[in-house]
Image (tube, rainbow, N blue to C red; front, side, top):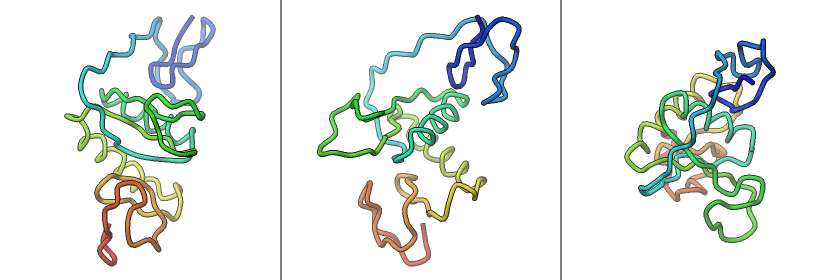
Length: 143
């Protein structure tokens, strides 16, 4: 079998490139690294598809990540009923991860009419004065 190192999909022999990620397939997947350090929230989304895309982007850059509250089964406890999915990364890679996420959304305006929180990188509605995810207050016209 062949595997996509990005999205982890499995393909039959003979297929050499993942049709979703457009990356060369590998013969086996490396096991996920065990996180022995503090994890921090690099981004929050309500879309499982966006969460998986961000996770793939981070993994391509060598940043391991974990999704919390994916499909309603929380890896880490989440208070209340929420469809939010957090992308958690090792604390020492938080700024790098947020920079990659911010750059992705800036380079892909079709991602929507949302703005990015300058503190946590979350996509939020432009009319808000404060990030609903991290609480950072927005300066008028500056995010």
